[in-house]
Length: 302
Image (cartoon, rainbow, N blue to C red; front, top):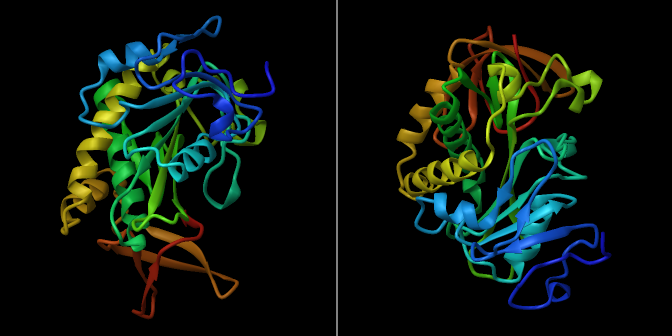
């Protein structure tokens, strides 16, 4: 592997992009013919992805990597360099995949979808939490349409099958000199991941489409389907009223009335979920009738 990203037929030298030296770039934009082949698995290919897309803009520019540190980090660099909205970074393998609060997201090669999407949603940086909800809904609906498996959502950013995590979402705002904020939407999906691919301490908490269904799933059609669902819900997200997205999230989340435990002022507290507001916060009620709004942090559903 070279010390610089390797690109086949890019419009300008890879060195000008200042991408991490550990990355191997297979193709830039959907006009590339380069193909990623990992023995024993299905193929990620920019040209085929273009043929499968039904979107207006999402995924029409794709940076495809055999291996990189984190697709979110690559997407941040590209966004700051002016990459258009809808650009995606897609990797077959991540060495530093991450989730909320700095947690590691296991990203073995040839078996998952590790995708980051560049968005420019306007001038309100407070819309990051509801965008996480919208992304979760789009991911859940894409997985249901693709697999027919019983997908559920866990607040704020996990996608589950039978109470085990099959996908995670990480939305990050990017500081930029541009007038409007940049947001990177990162999605990791365990498609054909085997139990042995996960750290042993996670074996009871995680799953994949293959583990749940008992057979292999081609990844590339799911990438195209996911982008279609993301673009559709992004149009809804850009409207003033978030009621539709909230209702769809609640359908898959099924959290109303459930007891949760969270930390408040360094002490564990048990409360009951009474609502999910339009900004994506959980509203919980204590035994004394007082309500609290949870916007972040760890919540354990009891």
